Every structure is written in C-alpha cells, then in structure tokens.
Image (cartoon, rainbow over all chains, first blue to last red; front, side):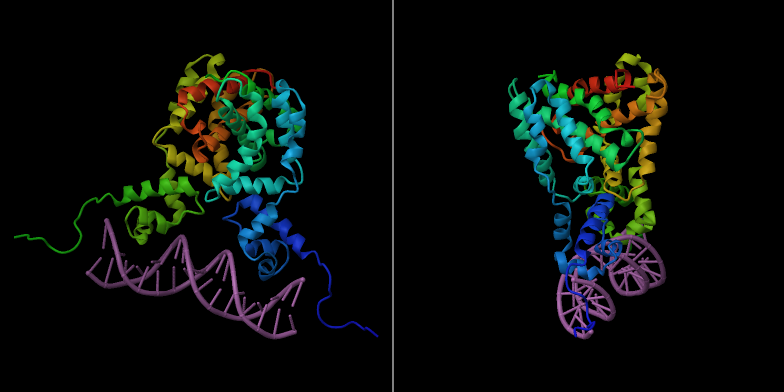
Length: 199
Length: 199
DNA sequence: GTCTATAACTCGATAGAC
DNA sequence: GTCTATCGAGTTATAGAC
C-alpha cells in the first residue's frame, strides 16, 4: 500500500530560505527600489506568486531578509570592556567584524537602500547612531556637548569605508585584511572620539 | 494691426532651464530610480511630454542635469599650489568648497544614484578617484605603491562626510561651517596621504 | 514650443486550480 | 506548497494636433 500518490510531497522544500537568500543578495546589490520580486523569484528558481504567499508584500520581504540575528550589545561588548584610550581601534574591530561576516549582504542592503533614496532616514539614524550613541557618548563627552559631533565623525569615516570597501569594492581597500584596516582607521576614530576636534 | 493672435508666443520661455533645475533637485533627493519624469515635469510646471521633447529619454536628462560647469583642474589648483604637508586641509577645503556650492544638488545626485544601485560604478571611480588620483598620487607615493590605497582612504573619509552631512543631513555635522569641518577632517586626510598607514 | 492621447511595457499583488 | 493567469497601477516614450 501507500504507492506514490499524485500531488506535491509534504514537508519543507527549502524554497522559503532560498527566497530569503536571493532577496538579501539582490537587495544588497541593487537596493530596494531597483530590486523586483520577479527577479528574486527567478534567482530562487521559484514562482513570483510564491514570494507573496510567504511574505505578503515586498516591504515585509525586505524586513524579513535583513532581520539580523545580531545583538548590538554583543557586538559592542569588547568596546565596553576596554579602556577609553583604546576605544577607536576596538570600535573599528567590532564593526568590521560584523561587516566581514555572513550578515554582510543584509547590512549592505539596508545601507544602500537608505542612501539610495526614499528609505527611512530615521531608521538608519536609529540603527547607525542612537544605538552606538548611548554606548559611546557618555564615555567621551568630557567637554560639554561635543559627544554627538564626535560620534557623527566616527560614523562618517565608517560610512565612507562601507561605501568604498563593500559597495564600490575598490581595490586594494576592498581586499585589505580587516586587521590592517583597523590599524589604519582606528587612530582616526580615536582622535575623533577623544582627541582635539575644536570646541 | 497685429492684434493679439492666438497660439503660444515665440522665443525662449525658460521651461528648459526649469526642467533641468527640477531634475537636479529630485535626482539629488531621491536618486535616479525613484525619480519619475512626471514628477520632474510637475515640479517644473510643465507637461511630461515636453521633457522628452527636449532631452529624448530619462537617462539623457540625467546626464544633462548633472553636467558640471566645474573644471576639476581649477578646483584642485589650490591643492597643487601648496606644500605636501598642507595637502590634507587644502584638499578638504577644495572639495567642501564645491559641495557647499550651487553644484551641490548635481553632485549629490550622482553620488546617491551610484550608491543607490544600478549606476555605473566605473563612472564614479573615474570621477571620484582617477581625476584626483593622477593629481595626488605622484606627490605622496614615496614608499613604493602605497599611493592608490592612500587616495582610497581619503575618498572613504570624504564619501562618508558626503553621506552624513549632505545626504542624511545629520546635525550638528550638517550645519557645521565648512571651515570647522576642514579643521577636523584635514588632519585625517593628511595622515592618510603622508603619514604612517602601515606598509 | 507645448500639449493631449495613448502605445508599450513592467511591476506588485490577487484569485484560484492542482 | 506551488503554479497559471490576470488585474490594476505606474512608468517611459511616441505620434500628432495646435
């Protein structure tokens, strides 16, 4: 009995995961606006309607694709653990560690989408600044009120690194080992955070 | 005789210039992909078909809108004129001078469009690097072969500044006088160009 | 030079068969 | 769970009247 019956087999076929993976890659490569659900479906070798079946709409798919299994508190733990005069290199190490990880595509996707226009600036502001903000500002804000500017300067150097190294992928910077990048950029961050930046 | 006759008046009506101006603003705000010709026409208070009449297609309009009446050689002249140990601040001053000028929208439009995806990376590479490249590298490349990396590091800091100050417009950095920004960022560029960045 | 009308295309989303 | 078929909205671009 139980000879092969018609119809699809039950159980997980992996389509859902392939959709998420394809979405991450395409969102990272092209940003939100220029990525089509049809293209995602094609890359995942799946029908476009199936994408809607799983995720409802494009925005929900984006959110699902970029959902990070990364706790910012964990990432910043080594920064918190070190002395203030090492905060620059430690911060660079922590961030590059995440960027050079499998979560890379998801992070690039968010960054690229926000920069590419339309994306919610407030969202990136929260993600990029406020989380790091509360962590860093209290430790470097001895002269009253320079904390925000200092963190923004750090963000500017790291954002630019993201652009050149991960988005435009310009060599040799793109292939430089993370440790070398930390050696170069760490002192810059250190100066922005604890050095002299005017009043 | 010659009483008011029906039909449009001959001569230049300024529509073409208004279209270009609107295009610059919208491309700068939303990137290439998310900007529609209809929106450009609406902002210029003109029919959408007129845009096609003048510029043919959307891509040609973009090219026309971002065409810079700026000669990179002129911008870099003050950099060329100064000593090598002032090259960082001078370069920052030169670039911020252009960015804080009326050409601002056009430059943001290019940057945002390339970062936003789809845009020709090679195009920005030429614009962002190669032009500055030939100007800067020969002056800082004493240890063999570090020139390209040094210029890319400078580009990363400036690209990040572009993101935070002009695209995300995060305060207080966005409203900081250019002179103050040069004071802060100049030393960073100087170190990247002539300082110690490893081998 | 400017506009109306519309062709031709692409996208996100839905309905329903299997 | 997966696919076919299609709708409706939005886009660029063209043709032609005035």
